[in-house]
Every structure is written in structure tokens, then in C-alpha cells.
Image (cartoon, rainbow, N blue to C red; front, side, top):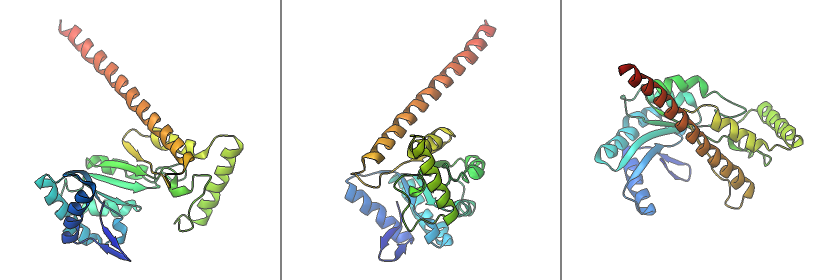
Amino acid sequence: ALPIYGVNTWDYSAKRATESVYESMERLNIDFIDLINVHDIEFADLNQVVSETLPALVELREKGVVGHVGITDLQLENLKWVIDHSPAGTVESVLNFCHYCLCDDKLVDFLDYFEEKGIGIINASPLSMGLLTERGAPAWHPAPKSLAAACRKAVQHCKAKNYPIEKLAMQFSITHNQSIATLVNNTSINAPGDHRYMFFGILLTIFIHIAYFFIDFVQYYLFFGKTMLQCF
């Protein structure tokens, strides 16, 4: 994902965007990137993202260096602004954090917009960057104090019921809407609890996809089977 960071440096220029893609491929020892994201556009001049960063990545897409181009941000309004001010087809996916989880479902208000534009939706941080965990959120978390306090109460309530809030939060984000992909990450490779709930989430996602496949298959069979009978 872009941009390239230094010490207090956010470089969204077309030149640096192009360079960073090739540098990333060299470090990863690959010759193709399926999806390249312009990351955290809230820290950029959105006009520069539209006029420089995205066109540079679209050029790489046209050359076959990357498969798809997306943007990421905490603020949904920023994602919409960039899409509205870019040529159709420029942005193929959006990744948004903390807005489709137990304590915040603002992403729902933007689903129709993204889907009408044919843009894929990735919901990141179903645990709301730590708010919905027994570990708790980091000190820098941007949530209002009232929300953080409410989440702490929810954590204690789930704990009293012997049902981890992490599991409940994962269930909500993964099963609530099939048009949203959910992205989960670990805070540490030495966090067994995180691994457990991530594994649970993966299994649940696989189960849901299998279920939808069979539902679609049955509907397809019933519809076309009935149509064929009518034809004969």
C-alpha cells in the first residue's frame, strides 16, 4: 500500500507512487501486485491523490504491473470525494476502518453508493482497533471517550456472560452483509487469543461462502429446471 513513509513524511507524488510499487515488488520478490492501495488518504492533499497518485497507478494497471487500484481511509467522506472527482473506473475498491463493527456501522450509509459505482468494499478492523477486545484500545485511538467507555462496559458484560467480545464482534462483521469483505490482522505474532479469533473468522467466512454457493446453486437449478420443463 502507498504512501511511502519517512519521519513525518507522506509522499503521494506520482513519481514516488510509481517508484514505491517497483520497490515493493523487488522486496517481495514478485512481478505483479493484485491490488495496490493508496493508503490513509486523509493525510494527503486529496486533489493530489486525484491528479497524481491515482493516475500513476492506473498507468501501472494499464501496463499490467498491478491488477487493481484502491484507496483506504478512516473517513468515508474522503473516499467518496476522491471517487466523485476521479474518472469512472479509476478506483476499484475501498478499504475503511472501524465503521462496520458492533460499535459503529456508518459504512452501511455508503454501501449503496459504492455498489452503484461497482466498487469493492473491504471492512477493516472489525474489533475497532482494539475497542472491542479485552486488551483494550491504544492510547492514540481516535474514538470519543464516551464510545470508549461504552465499549469497556460491553467487554465486561460479555466477559460476565463467558462469551468473548472478540468472537461476537467477528460474527457481526463477517455475517451481517455478504457484499462486504472483512479484513482482520494480528497485533502480534505471539498473541494466541488473536490467532484463535482470526482462525474462527476464517472458518466462519469459508462456511458462509459455501452456504451462499449452495443457495445459489439450488435457486439456479430450480429456476432453470422449471424453465426447461415448461419448454418441453
